[in-house]
Image (cartoon, rainbow, N blue to C red; front, side, top):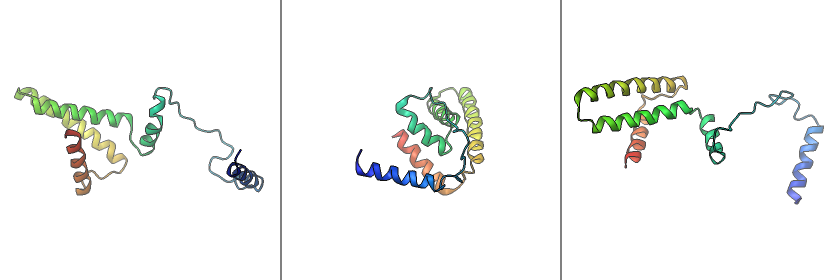
Length: 125
């Protein structure tokens, strides 16, 4: 062991014996471990960061579906089919905005719209 590890261990032991950890939230309770077996090991950290930031798998799936519908609408030749696709896109957008409003993200602000447009432009290159 190197010197910094030894010093760190000593500080932790001293703090523990002084009772500094006794009043931490969750003290004495079992850890709430997440089951991440379905997430590939190399993606787990990114998954945790996104989840902690409030992004869910359903939200990402909705984003992908909306982008696909948008592509289909742009390339659609049949006006009737285009109308059906626009209706589906509207429903998904409404659901997506509902998810964002639960997280209290203001999607109507000009800053959000500007940022959203920049991301959209980057994705479409």
